[in-house]
Image (cartoon, rainbow, N blue to C red):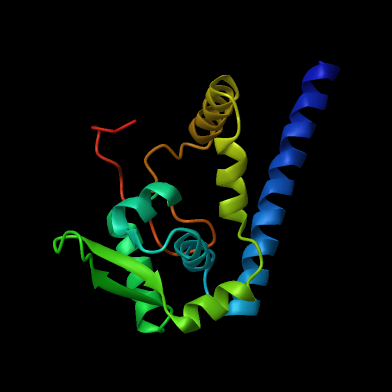
Length: 167
């Protein structure tokens, strides 16, 4: 019994830590930049990879392309990104930062979502399977399996993925 209560207390404390860091970093980023966490994360990825296609940005953010388009619409309206047809393939739209977007990235703090993705991508498949299984159990305990996943500290919902996933 003692081992169980110690393990449960450790899990609860670690969940509190995760939520606290994500909450604090997101608030700090929004206060300092005026951008939501997902918007800031998007411009940071664009800064690393521009010009980038919407589908590639969505893949790097682990989001549905339609969700990313909404983020890009808001960033474009504020003058941080620009969309242009690819010179190689006119059917393809590429995204790049504007000068204003580059300045914003330069003065921006880290984004919790980005740190999380980088950390998870560095783990072994076994650790990822263990974490995934544990989180699925937590979701089941809370009866939250059918709740659409909102972006962290954002009102945006990540649209469901189709069952045909590419590796």
